[in-house]
Image 1: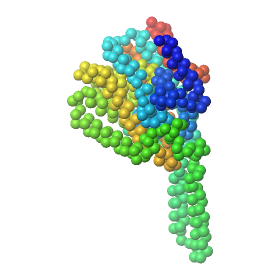
Image 2: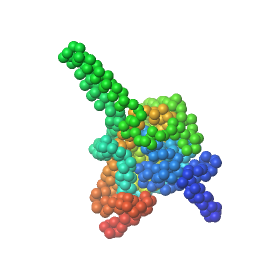
Image 3: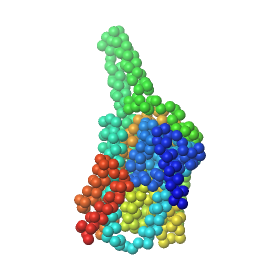
Length: 504
């Protein structure tokens, strides 16, 4: 058995090594080729969505060269502009572009299912735990949270270096970070994203300058001429000249904020390196139909949620998480406070169990949205719904809205990406989304500490040691190449050291 495993690992490793320089396929069967390129990500992508984006960039842009830098940045902005799990949508979209829809959909399960199963097992274990945990466990969990915050902070800094391309995007990153810290509501994060996108559209298309020129021109034309013959002739000539200048500035050949690389992207870039992209990514009509179908499903679920609330726990759970998956913008870090409202608020999950699961699942690789699997399992405890059914409900309800909408918008994107206004909007959305990552760092910092008296979560600033763990994780990754898994292990060990010195 060990020899078979060694042979398989050798084949995958050698195939991956061959692939890095040129992007050649390992297998002629798309599903097997996808598996060879994606299987390890579910087990090695620690640190949450912000780190995942860095991993995907290194793998698919720099390594496999399936997409170029500009396409990646536009896809990143599109993933952040839509609801749902950001890094999961990115991995799904890249595989759909490269392999086609069905193989891309399969990659979604390869990426998310392993840790979803682990989250289900964790929930079963937590449901059998008493009110109090051993004291060293609290210290270990606090160490895990501290290291995770450091990893996310480093990823936020790295993402901001790519998002900041001029003074405006620097301001938008700062705006997203600070505004996100000041307030928290269901409608608030989408509004911040809209503000970011609108700002870059106004700036890149010079809408204010154009409006000001029109006002000045109307003002000049409304002034009575001093000399009837000569002055009217001069004003007419000047007006024609200004019109020619305005037309020259409005030419689309060199729009503000558009890079040389984006000009060179062919119209068929969405077909991916293999040219096998599905019709889903090429037909804007099909994309619009998919979006319309989702909106219809959302209306139906919300109407049923209002009519049949508190009748069946399984449906209540699905409706709440379906709503959460639809209104979550900004990816995994934003889902945490929202899910707390939707499962702890109704009394389905105890606050302590919520934070215990948060601390442990933050140390899991793969998508943070698997946290909903953990919560779904606990939410149906004591009802006639089996725990496995609760886990499946949580999985489907939280992932479906974002993936469904993103699939539709991939078709619409074939038309929309050609518009300068859309590209400008994505530039602002990208910057605002990166700012919200800094907000996530702050919010996780404020609930990362756990002990027997603070089971609802407390600030890591309670003891400087947790800040030291955070800084160790950040500096280790930035300056010494410490990988996220190693940083998580170091954080756990340092948490136990704190317990041995301070509490033992």
